[in-house]
Image (cartoon, rainbow, N blue to C red; front, side, top):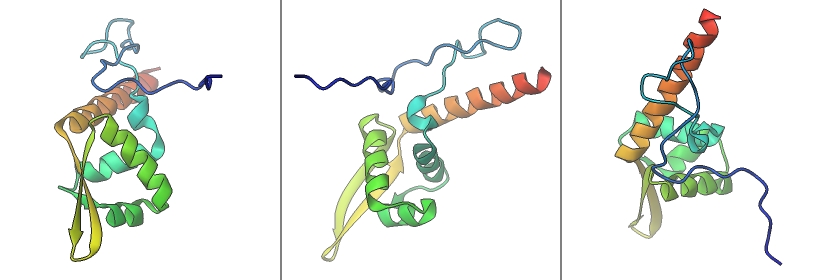
Length: 128
């Protein structure tokens, strides 16, 4: 029997956001928007934000910065990597494995769209 997954799924990589209308009912400036649920999750938003202000961060640096566990960081990093939002480079420093993450141009654009959406929500809420 196939496993049923009733939970909503994240949008596929590169999917255009849709949904939110501007404060007066018209389309938002960049077309209709919907929150990028992949980035909206707290830990992934923190990871993307940290990578946006750093050229690269290692697994251990992210783990310390975000105060999370190996497993939690690994799962969220994999989701961002699969979406094309981050690049993961694995190497060795002597005999010690080193995993380094960088935000991709796709990830940076996704973060920018997400922040624009949140700013629009804040403006709309304050106008109400």
